[in-house]
Length: 124
Image (cartoon, rainbow, N blue to C red; front, side, top):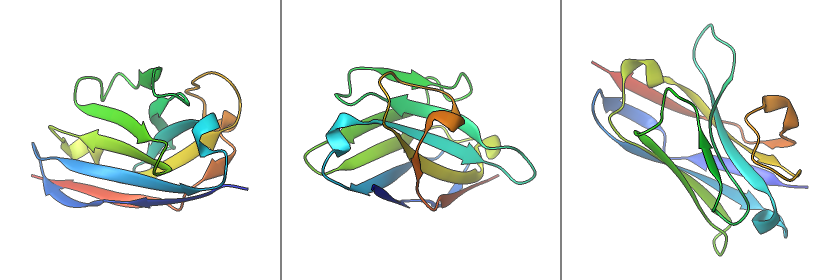
């Protein structure tokens, strides 16, 4: 069983930055692919970024490429999402998730464990 807790969300002006954290419990955190997803009001949850177990493989949604950076520290069982140049359309609840399969997936259905989410609101 893996438990995930997100933090770092909040209110920020457009153009600003936030760093989200996802703390994981469980002995095999370092073996899993981790991902960030988000859900805006009235929209379906969508992929944001994912990172392989070693940190060497990373994938991003086109909408965040060049602005967001995903990373992880396996010694701290923590994953991060550095978000820069935030836009109004980045406003959403951000979720972290674990995929126990090999590979770095973009697909929500392949993730096995989810956090409760943290709200990010970007204002003009």
